[in-house]
Image (cartoon, rainbow, N blue to C red):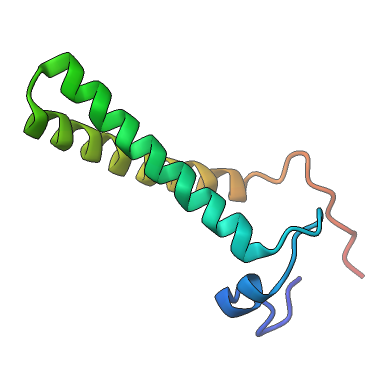
Length: 91
């Protein structure tokens, strides 16, 4: 069980390192740049298919918003599933 105040902190995250020694700020920048590339690619594909730049923009942005929301929901659901987790016995 987590102690109070032991939750996620953006300040601690950005100041820390992950298990590979990579700075969290670098990891965050990599994630953001990957998502920006994905958004641009989605918009470009939708524009190419429709031939309409505004429709491509709308489809690309809507698609990425839907992906973020469904991914968040997916993570919430998996957070409730205890299968496969090593949970130490309570004393």
